[in-house]
Amino acid sequence: MAQPVEQWITDIPPVTRAWVVASIGASVLVECQVVAPLQLYFSWKAAVGNMQAWRFITTFLYFGPLSLDLAFHLFFIMRYSRLLEENSFSNRRADYVWLLSLCSAFLLVISPLLTMPFLSSSLAFALVYIWSRRNPSIKMSLFGVITITAPYLPLCLVAFSWLLQGGFQAAIGDIVGILAGHTYVFLQDYWPREMWSTTGRGEIQTPAPVKRLFGQSER
Image (cartoon, rainbow, N blue to C red; front, top):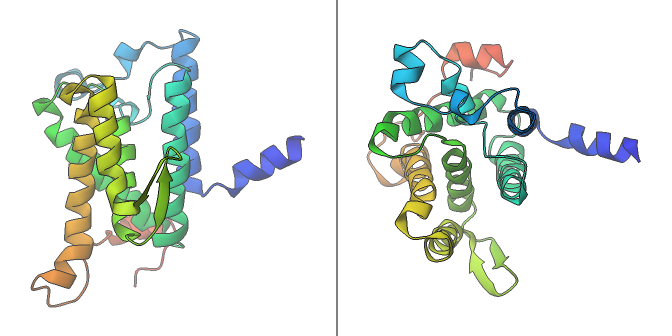
């Protein structure tokens, strides 16, 4: 039985696998009271003023205590991060890491405007949005009741959060994730196709040092 589980884990692409493992690890450490959530959340004052730089990372790793809610978020990472990494970013690990870095930076910059100490859910939702926009023809069943095409998935999930979990405040994390994802999609996909790009390429280019770090061709 151990072998199929081990094979299943190794089949997960490396960036997605590292994020999932780190997220589970953060929740386990909190559950075992090795660290407290207050040590993991992000604020500019704590991260920069108090020189607690790890908060730039841990805010994207902690989804909450061990619970069904954590399992739900890990499912989203496993599904949509994996789909992006295996398809849109196949053999382009550096580009995928750069995507995550840019979306994370966007969320960190706007975080002072919001009451959101943890940005992990928003980053995961940004990936859902990017995947949905890059796969517009895929049809999917929502809770086995409604059939929709992929671009409507983020809007439906926001609507469910809004209606079932307590209004705008419950949905703000998903909405911010959509903003982060749309910014990336606009610059990388829409701009060269719809605007006046002279190169026909997206405006976002992964820096050469990042490509070398992950062994990706610089072409």
